[in-house]
View (cartoon, rainbow, N blue to C red):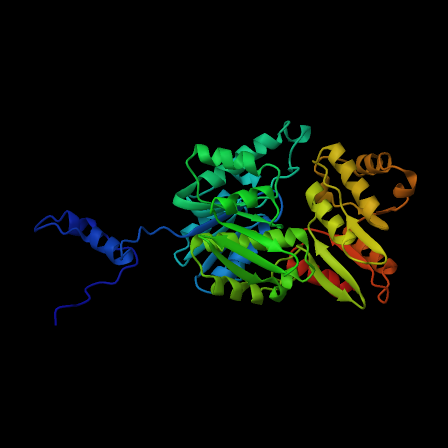
Length: 437
């Protein structure tokens, strides 16, 4: 027998072996490293990073759900920090410190990270490079204007570029071809010699998609007629059967974009289509899996949806969903966010009043962010025109009362819809439903 155990130690000292008082030094450290990182592995934890204005959390949840079929997965979002399906921290964890915790955990085999603007500006991204970076969208932007030190769309793009340019050599970037700023972003990536780009689109007819197909560059697009997602690269066309995805049963545009971004990232990393498709078929976009992100529950013949609509583009997304469906009474509850510029808040409420029959304006003390209740009330009521739209607004004192008020308006037998905008976690939403529905 040539082997034996002389000591078992969680943190062994190497000095006595590498620099003995008597005898020949032994390079124990290199043997340990070789054992831990064999097959020429560099010890890097695979990372997929997701940034953008809207859709980040859903995209992260979709990707991580697929990845954790194979790997022990660390995930951060604006809702919390998770290992596989278990939450370890609650709250906004889309920043530097949570990233460090994910990557420091010795069990982590794969990391899927939501990287938000605020975290980047405060401390950075918390890792050296990712395998794949996604930019979901920029569009009209968020956190811009005088309330954010005159932060502009171009400033926002520069901040998001921090995520996109910090990818490994030969890594990939996934971009939304439908976003009006994508050409500018591609040009910026080219300056950093980043050319591995997958474009996705809700339509094959998008100009950028057509250019990429002609150049034999990888694209994903949604075929509305066939209800398929189509992937084209290297003169090969492959299909994802969207009809089997619960998250896409209502064919909501921004959910299609989230799924496209997810598939693009998984393909870029190297997962095969069967593996990706299997995860997406099993995924359920419900209150427990993806809280406050278009969670739909049946209420008789009517529908209640919980969603975190908090800026112009997310509200426009809800408007598109309402227009494309034949609901009777349309109700929404919303708490305005105080640190948005006044013109953004006014525009948001005008869109809501044009779209819904009842707009339940409730106050969240957390969301006031320096504004008073009186200020917010006067801002909205004095700037929604014409008066027949203003008459749709009902002022409610808090979120629970707004939810309860909506239920008195909602008719279970009438094919009505009530969208409750909230950033509550799954436990809080379930409690709200249990106590009040």
